[in-house]
Length: 295
Ligand SMILES: Nc1ncnc2c1ncn2[C@@H]1O[C@H](COP(=O)(O)OP(=O)(O)OP(=O)(O)O)[C@@H](O)[C@H]1O
Ligand SMILES: [Mg+2]
Image 1: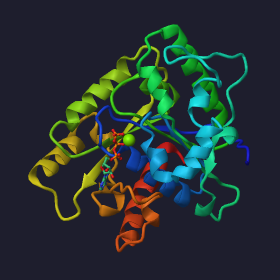
Image 2 (image 1 turned 180 degrees about the vertical axis):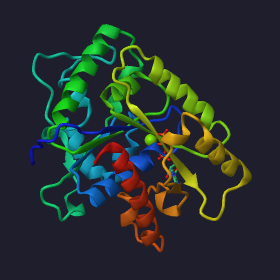
Image 3 (image 1 turned 60 degrees about the vertical axis):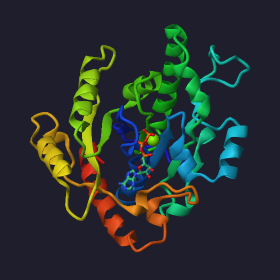
Image 4 (image 1 turned 90 degrees about the horizontal axis):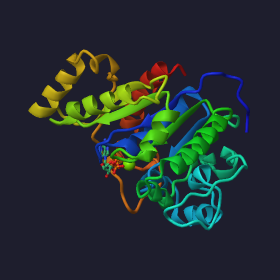
């Protein structure tokens, strides 16, 4: 692994408290396009207990091996132990390094010095939504943030796939992030959701400096917007706070992005007539996003 000398490493939390808006789809496909177009070492972190990002990208047999060896994000939160569901393990030992946990997508690249890796997710993270011992949880968050700081020395950028709804894990992602990428479906309540998220970030007392909000419209029909989608997009782009934060590039509604139980991998690698078109569309998003991230 090539160590970096660069000082600023953008950490992008793909976040929206709303479920099903395309966080996971965007996290995998947009980050891959950033990696390929900008040739930047890229790490994905699956911080959703449902671990859909991992399930979409890793074959079951591979995941089972990582899980059996404790090579998942859970090891960045707690050392291996026998503690129960309502307790957390602590240790004076430092957290693992990214190379101890990562899965590398070697096949994707002919850039030997740049890596595209994922820290696999883990359903065990669900325990943090059952706990209310803040002192214990603080230890978990501190360990995760330490892990993340170490990752920054090995990659040019990091993308974190977050769970929907607000939780302890959302706080971990917010404290790690330099940018929040919010996927927004062009429907009637999306701007309300953005206002709540933005207020939450503004008012979170422990969050300093505040991560920058970036908005990506997802699921936009290529064949012309319906009336609701067109008016929501117009309202968003004219919004004094959110308009300037909304990417001009759009994530289209496409069969290529639809999750399928019989397919593991990135949309761009799926055989289909859409390949060239989504390649160009993802490149447009990646270039605009990379510009905002300073990559
Ligand atoms: N642009 C798109 N075109 C077609 N299908 C899409 C698109 N974006 C997302 N989907 C589909 O919508 C569903 C939800 O997407 P995804 O899992 O990415 O959302 P999410 O925000 O991560 O959901 P959750 O809140 O459950 O984590 C999936 O079946 C996905 O394949
Ligand atoms: Mg998801």
